[in-house]
Image 1 (cartoon, rainbow, N blue to C red):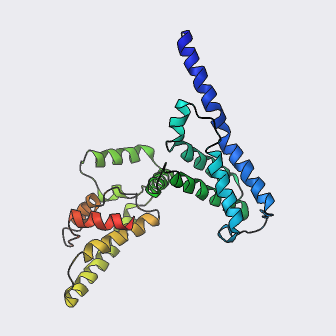
Image 2: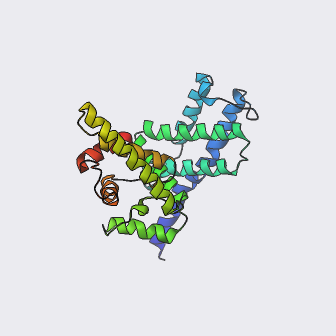
Image 3: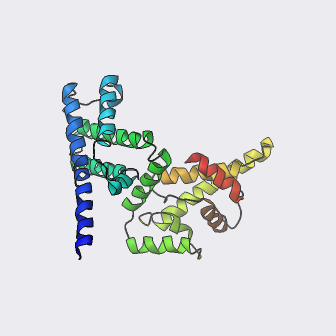
Length: 261
């Protein structure tokens, strides 16, 4: 490594060093605010109902910690990306999972602090709510993967648009027999709803809405993987049901699914 390269890395380290302590400092500062307002972390606290001055000072603390770091060119680029906020949330999450489950007050405090970090990223126009939604979905999916090899294979199959089994859209911890039961119940419900709609002369995207409701329910229950686009699953499902149920068009399904997210 020549002198010029060595100087570059030394300068970069000097810029980054102050940032390395941001997460630790933020926790220390916010605990100081907790003490100032006599918030008892040993008892159960409803953080949303605490006085506005407390919440304002906490938010101000988070905001100020993002601005006190001396910014060189490289560090300035980093701070105006989502990296810092994602790292802070990760640090809070690590602290959260170190706590005992019965330590409800401290866990609630960290939940509220994480919310303020996310809110600050939005206030500074660095991130938006959809960015955090994607992060949460990706974390949820990663946490529920039991067999990484099978998971990678399924994701690649979908990406390459090869033949995909209906079970590939569900987490592999859910047994095929249980998935069959879920889909059978959904089919019966949709056919009943279709019959009822025929009696009432209703038209429109009824079947699409019904199946999207089921998809969102299965995802919320941790049975089904997040979907960027819903049509591939619905197309596969129609084939699984021998085309006995018309779930709607690609455009209609995607529009309804987007509304639900």
